[in-house]
Image (tube, rainbow, N blue to C red; front, top):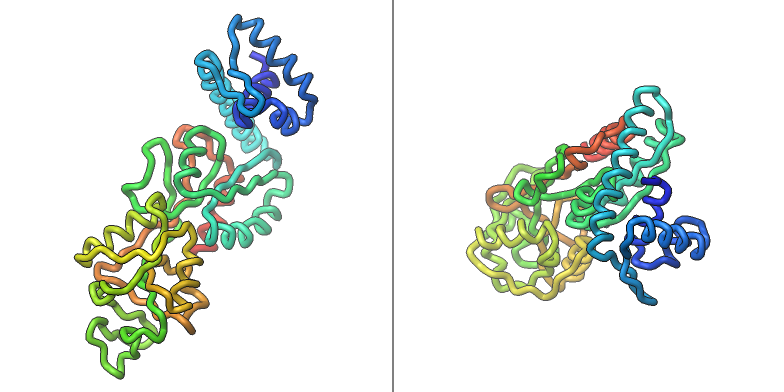
Length: 309
C-alpha cells in the first residue's frame, strides 16, 4: 500500500468531499480523482458513494479506511520513537482542549513549549470532552486536556491527573442567602476568614438555574449534586459555556453550579459557596493507551501541569 495514496483516501473520507480534500492536500481535484480511480481499479470495488455534496465510504471503503488509519498511526508512532531516540526536534503534535479554560491553558503553555521544541508543529483544536475522547480513540488527535469524573473515562485512553477542581454554587451577590456571616445565615455554614462557606443547596430550590447541556461532562456531576440536595432545579435554560452561567448569575437572573476556574474575577457580583461533600472533578491530560507518547507530548503535559498547579 502506498502511504501517499493512503493519505489521499483518508483525506477524502475526513472531508466527505473530493474538492475539499484536494484543497486540504494542495493538489488538483483531477489528480486526486485519478489516484482514487487507480486504487479502485486495483481493488476491483468502489471505495466511496459519490454525490455532489457528500462522499461517504462504501462497506469496502470502511474496511480500507480502518487499515489505512492504523498504518498512518503506526508510521507516526515510529517516527516519534526514532526522533526521540535521535533527539531530533521535528514532527507534529495535535492538542485538544475545552472552550474557556482550555484556551487559557494553551495560551500560557504554548510559548514555553515552542521555546523547548521550536520545530514541532502544534495544531490546537478547541473541542468538547466527548469529541476529544472520540478523536483520541480514532487517532485523529494526539493529546487531549479534559475535565471529568472517573466514571466518564474511556477504557481505550490513558488519563494523567493534573489537578483537582472544586465545584461551587454561584448566587447573585444581592440574593438574601449571600448575606455576610456576621449578619447571620440560616442556610450556610460560616467558616474562617479567607475560606468559602458551605451552602445547603436545598435553600435555593425555588430559584431558577442556568445549567450546562445534558451532553456535557459537568452536567452529570451537576445532576448528582441536585439529587443529593433532594430537589430538581427549575432550569431557565441550558448552555455549553460556563462563562455564560457566570454572566447570567452576575446579572441576577439565576443561580448556577460552576467549576472553581470560572469563579475568578466575578466576586463583585457573585457569592460562591462550596457544597456538602465538597464535590470536585479532575483536570486531566489523556492519550491513546496504545499510542507512543513522544517527548514533545510529555513536555506539553508537564507544562500544563505547572499551569494548573
